[in-house]
Amino acid sequence: MKYHPKPSRYDHMIYNRCGLSGIRLPAVSLGLWHNFGHVDDYETARRMLFTAFDAGITHIDLANNYGPPPGSAEENFGKILRQDFHGYRDELIISTKAGYLMWPGPYGEWGSRKYLLASLDQSLKRMQLDYVDIFYSHRPDPDTPLEETMMALDQAVRSGKALYAGISNYDPDQTLEASEILRQLGTPCLIHQPKYSLFERWVEDSLLDILEKEGIGCIAFSPLAQGMLTDKYLQGIPEDSRASKAVFLKKEHITSEIINKVKQLNNLAKKRGQSLAQMALAWLLKDKRVTSVLIGARTVEQLEDNLGTLDNLEFTSEELKKIEVILG
Ligand SMILES: NC(=O)c1ccc[n+]([C@@H]2O[C@H](COP(=O)([O-])OP(=O)(O)OC[C@H]3O[C@@H](n4cnc5c(N)ncnc54)[C@H](OP(=O)(O)O)[C@@H]3O)[C@@H](O)[C@H]2O)c1
Image (cartoon, rainbow, N blue to C red):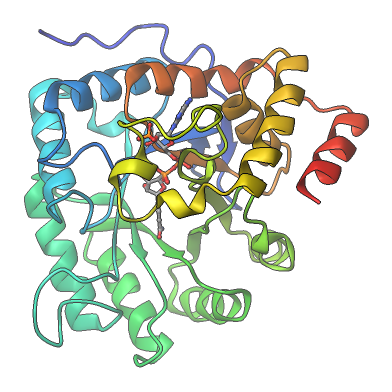
């Protein structure tokens, strides 16, 4: 099948300015952590990328270790880019990260300059790209000076292998320090990628305020709590779901307490005329400090459902209060 992107692809997406940068990101971005590895169906992965791009999702998020096996999401994405997106590179914001284990020995993970820059070269090779748009430190390293990690990000940008620098999973103090170092180096931090959903709200304590003050964008990962914030677990655990297959979401996480909350949230979403997934994403996007929600999807239908979020982003104060009561 030959792919021709829809001419109407920019008509419905909302683009939010990323911090104080010149970059605008789609309100909904697509991450390739699961479902794009060599173990997954290549044609489904391709169709999801077509659906995403046709709907104005210009931002695709990767990391060195996405798969499985690690690296295979980048390989598949690179292949699809060459096969189907030839001529569209300049319409895409592609990110990758380094931080988790990629190769044996002392230089295959964390935050050293040695690891980060070698990993970026490997990612570019796998995707067959000259540069990525955003290169992230995937997690803070307790044993490497923050200066060294930030200097490696700065070097990645100066060398032209990345256009912007980002951080992920950094706590508020680490974020402030990283931001100061990067600014001094002349490569301001573009974006922070924290875990944020109705079920995981640590960023509200102080991180979001810091990001706003520092002019850094925020892209919320696992905004559906890996699928828990959908209606899929209301009748048990489906065989093809992440909780039944993957290691990061386990059956034990789907507790009766969670299901009780999900039921109530689902009823509220129905009253709003949207799916629970849509309500969960809209709830994150109501905060103007959140640049984008970084979703995952296993099927085209899930992706389309999530894109429907954009049709109803408003909440009444009554609805917001109800959500707080449900979450307890
Ligand atoms: N920086 C980091 O450390 C970090 C960590 C994790 C993720 N991320 C990034 O964030 C991205 C998203 O993470 P995530 O996949 O955990 O996000 P998520 O959106 O919270 O969960 C995605 C999963 O939820 C289910 N789902 C999605 N839409 C659905 C719908 N409309 N109805 C029913 N089920 C639906 C699917 O799982 P089923 O297989 O069960 O159908 C899907 O794979 C990743 O791809 C990655 O780019 C970053």
